[in-house]
Length: 105
Image (cartoon, rainbow, N blue to C red; front, side, top):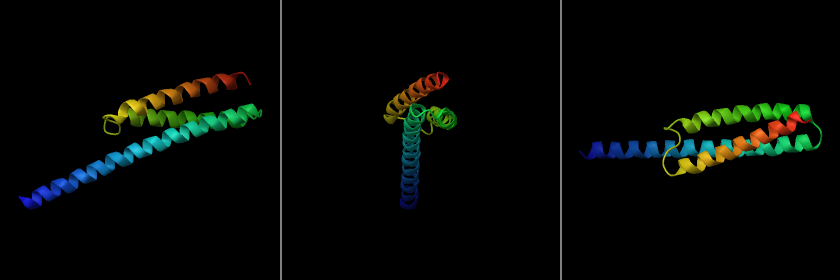
């Protein structure tokens, strides 16, 4: 019985580390998304519309991938889910604003 309990504890630890790694990855992708936003804003500010559009395309891809990950209940769950989803909403809002700004260029 002791060996089975030990294996269960080890399995539980592996699952916990896996969940933590997924959450860390999602947070890093959110951070990258916000960095892309800032970079796109700079490119727009200095009149580099083509480069801004390129970066905006990458940003859209990042947001789509994040949305898929965040909507997967195995990746985001529990107390952190609300915070992550709020950050994704903010990122999507910035994306819409940037798309509007690029259309005006």
